Length: 306
Image (cartoon, rainbow, N blue to C red):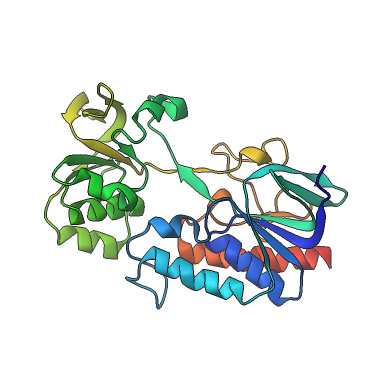
């Protein structure tokens, strides 16, 4: 059995909230380990152009992720690129296990983010046959595959509009479906969308299912007049986010979406555990909000364990 390394604070997740929480704690002379499963930056690496972050408007999300990473590397924070497999109590603190390591921390800050929601009629297992065969959750990653095709984008928030812009830039024709009466993305994104050709917007219309033999060839949509099908060559899902909180079920209180319930200091229902960014209840789902969360959670955690 791997012997656990003890630190003051464990941070789970290397997106903006996790990076900022780790920096906040390290700058106050706490020993910190940050555990991230894939790459620093989180969902930033899938954003073509940043919006809403003062001084960074228009730069690529991956470039901003590199800026945050560089700031982290200026601190003594220990980085571990591994999947977290266990979160459990360890005395008054917390234990975090991975496939190859274990850490005990006096405080734990969970910044594990969220993943795209799936279609209502299918759920996680139902869309698996179409992953890589017409269904995408990362338009900037997959946009070149849809050149000269008609692509449905499900969701008219920031992610959906960013997806539509990435797809049209790659030469796709886009039909953007939004369940409410108007798009909900930020103003700068909407103004950019209005300036490009090749995007058809259909409000009061929700994508509820997909169809096709082996790959996606149509979507089933719900309107006020009933259900209809539309022929497409692909679908990008941007219908909302589901918190990455599976390891916290039964550990702390979650809301109906699975988000961690927190107070004003971002403390969860169990002592010395904090949640920041998209995994917490009441998240703004904005990069600048995640950065603020990281600062609040880091400062609060150190006060609690001092």
